[in-house]
Image 1 (tube, rainbow, N blue to C red):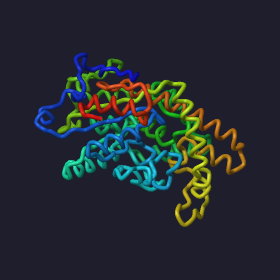
Image 2 (tube, rainbow, N blue to C red):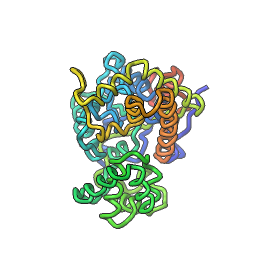
Image 3 (tube, rainbow, N blue to C red):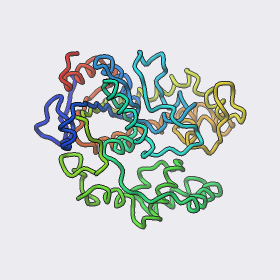
Amino acid sequence: MVQTSKPSGDPHARSGAPSRVPSRASREATSRLIVVLGPTASGKSALGIELAKRLNGEILVCDSTQVYRHFDIGTAKVPEQEQQGIAHHLIDLVEPDEVFTAGDYRRHALLALEDLRRRGKLPIITAGTGLYLRALLEGLSEAPARSEELRSRLRAIVKARGAAHLHKILARLDPATAARIAPRDTQKIIRAIEMRVLAGKPLAEIFAAGRPGLRVGVPDTSRDGGTPRENSLEGYAITKIGLQPPRAALYARIDARVEAMLAAGWLDEVRALASSRGNDKVPGVAADSKPFQFIGYADLRAHLEGRVSLADAVAQIQQSTRRFAKRQLTWFRREQDVHWLEGFGDAPEIASAAFNLLAVKP
């Protein structure tokens, strides 16, 4: 039997109700927006496609890795032949050497939403990156501008002593933020240190300043009827559906998916990307580019360079992915008004439960 839980922000929530109290502009609008969120390998894409097929929808992918071109298999982009004729937006937006932020994602997403609204299509967001989803739905707090001088110094530290050392610096400056960033995610570490140094306060205080009435350490109620940010998304009635499969089953699926990615040619993809010449389909990519820090790509590159066996690389990828899934669930559990479904998105009973929530006949 499929178990569901009502949105935590509204004890009287009912199936199909908007997932947050809308602004006056939202109440006057009739546009609907569905969000399918959950950890990696939970079946978000499969459920999103099923919903889109029945509801005249299209998919907006909310994933910080899939915005980069050429990094396809390891980021779990849905191949075109598996999209079942459903358009997928917000993937392959930039080259690997380009910087891409949550603000950039929001700008692209708003344009995509307007295009779907104009064409009468239902937007269905499949969200694995919580920060990008929050940026779109709630807007962004005012953050310090980039400092190229400071960034150059931080990059020099990485080159001389490695990303792990820079992560230790962040841990001293802002322990809470460091705990949420992987030790080898150089781009995020640099931005976090940059914001901490330039603003003179932890990132939690910076983000709190962008939400009227929010105090550090106090749950954010702006998503539950409080005062939203001035640049929060308006004009949509939002329903959030969360996928939460049993942990043991999720971990087993993660391990199997890594093996399937390798069988689909992931190692060859990395080999082409790591080559200075690339090939006729994939250009060579610099070793210090952001996508090479994604889970799996650095490990497979290390194997190709003879620094680790393939078996050890695969085991590390599987472990890192399981840990990542746990972090995703921790983040999404803080989201307000999520209808949680305890299963995988490709299970027929989960699709039926989702249609029931949306008051649509399966």
